Structures are given as C-alpha cells and as structure tokens.
Length: 122
Image 1 (tube, one colour):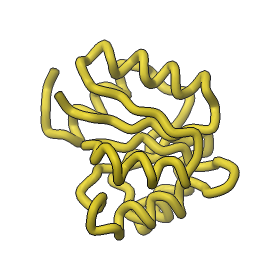
Image 2 (image 1 turned 90 degrees about the horizontal axis):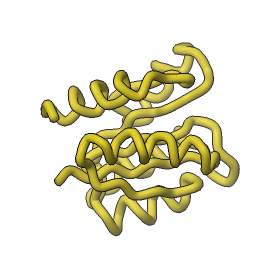
Image 3 (image 1 turned 180 degrees about the vertical axis):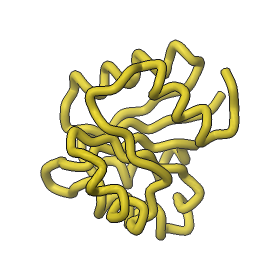
C-alpha cells in the first residue's frame, strides 16, 4: 500500500484530502505545518507528500526544499497544493516539488494526479 503525507495548516483541507485518498486505498498520514512534515517524512517515508504552500512556522517551499535535499527523504514525490495561481510553479519546482495543484480541486483530479506521479492506476 502506497503512503501519502498530507501537510496543511487547515484541518478541513487535510480531512478532505485524506478522505479522498483513502477511497483509493492509500495509507495517509497528516502534518499541520512544514516542521511536522519533515519529521513525519523522515519517520514514515511516504511515497507522495501533498504540501500546502502557505503555512505558519515553515511554509511549503522551505519544507519542500529541506525534504528534497535530505538523503532520507529525497525520493518522496512532492505535490504543492495551493489556493494561489500557477505563478508559483517555477518556484516550487526549483525547491524540489514534482508538481503544483491548485485549490479548489476536484477529488477525482487529485487522485489522478497522485496516480500519475506514482505511475499507478488504482
């Protein structure tokens, strides 16, 4: 079973993403900020991290940069989930993210994006 870490300071967004992905038989973990994301990524070695861009304490760019450069977590795929537009695409890719996904989103589109990143079809 593939593992996914959801990182968002909004409990409601985490719950929506978690419910969506658990329907597709993924094991889901949650973190509420970038610092917790790094800790959870090291502990659980997720296949995919869905990371909010704007969070307090440590934003998604900095957390992505640290995760993608850490030998223990560099193989995790990272999708940045943001309420902002696509203007951040270059910045998130430069930080080490695989892709950007804009809120609000269709749950089916999110599942398709994760499946594509993992090269699977569930």
